[in-house]
Length: 74
Image (tube, rainbow, N blue to C red; front, top):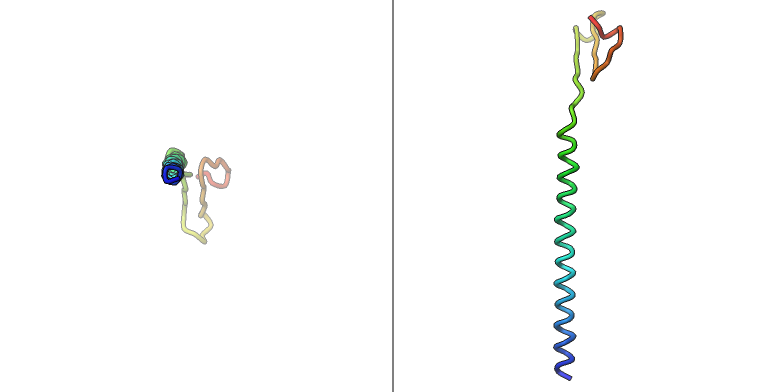
């Protein structure tokens, strides 16, 4: 009778330990995925913004990225 109790108690704590280890593994995997996701943004080039002239005047223009419009050329 007392051995059955200890057997169930040990099984309970082993299950808790395994569950905790799974959660730690999940947290580590999640952190690595988030880091990879953030690193993918660092590799991308940000668009180049070019502003020519003064805002509100006739010769003012702005181009973002690789825009090849006749209005943005000087």
